[in-house]
Length: 274
Image 1 (cartoon, rainbow, N blue to C red):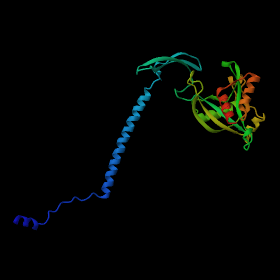
Image 2: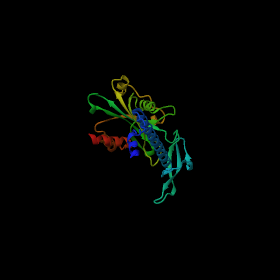
Image 3: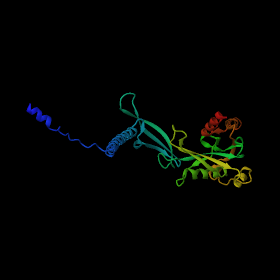
Image 4: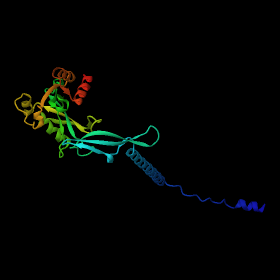
């Protein structure tokens, strides 16, 4: 009984309480955790990218350029035999196959752009696009033993960029001065035969310029042609923007000319929207 009374008389023991974490501390901890999570995520993403890069580098099929054999070379063309790896139907073992290709001797590197092809639209009436004309060229091409209808085009000189080459070639072949509107990435004209690439450049020819007006009306001669282009009778040819496909087909029937594939594709695409 006495012990019970003593216990009742004693004050209750105080429980030591830890101070609660401040709001700032909680936010700091959250930020640290978020930063660590982001760091781990970035590390995983980097490793994944590296793995993808290794996978792409070793992906099949691919060409082994160290095994390239040069068959013969002329002034302008080189014939190479490529070796490329392809996967078998089953398993990871690859087999080696051969492919012949033509390469321009002027090509600066495997992925360099060789040439420019120019789509130039002659604006006769800024308010009436149906009067627009496409600037083309007609010339004799020995490989096909025929005259061809093409877009103005030419090789890029070693010290030129795409825009400068397009402006130079366009003036040389047609006499007109054009304004560059757009430049497309490199495309490949016959990838089963050659690695030759060309960048398509879109230009507009403003007829308010005196030079362009004189060239159009035959009052100024185009003096830019030289060498084999002049020998092959290269001449400018204006075809309607609206009805381009019909105009090309008519030239083929009447004159037996052959049409540059890119120009024919352009005409077909434009006819779809007409």
